[in-house]
Image 1 (cartoon, rainbow, N blue to C red):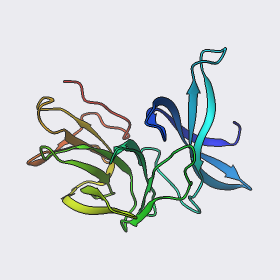
Image 2: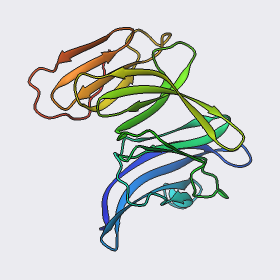
Image 3: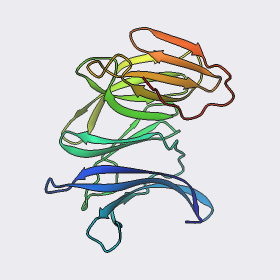
Image 4: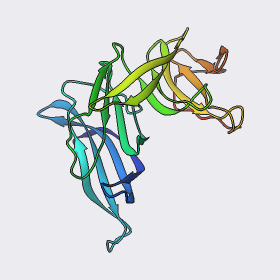
Length: 219
């Protein structure tokens, strides 16, 4: 698509209204609409029974992001309360929860203002045993939030907040102490520091640093 400025695709396993597990293709994309940038998210069903290798069929999408900008890493998808849940975070500080289904509305189920630009989010077991939390990266903080369902909304509470000494760029989570322990978080800063967040927060200067970029942990 010539109008596409940037996009990010992910393969996800979605359970439909009947509990059947299928593979879907998830796209988070930014397009120009009347010369104005508009973000939208879309699920496409991968039809393995088509004549070609696979075929994409529209499943669900939402473009409810007026006048907002996003980091492509500021979304995550996981199973929450036995439902497929999608979370997005914007530079304006708005956290949105969606429950995409074939018959679902594109309106966010819950919107929460966190009052700071959201750079990246990830859901998992971090730092604390037997507790899944939502890790949210802000320019100078990393915050872990607990997520609990209510009748008509989702309740988000702060579990732990870590102040960062260097302006953050991105983070990864990894099992530095083995898969029997919670994941640890490594934050890369824009000025070339790597901060390891566990029981103690330690920063190291990255050798021969030029610009921040994607990175990974290799045991």
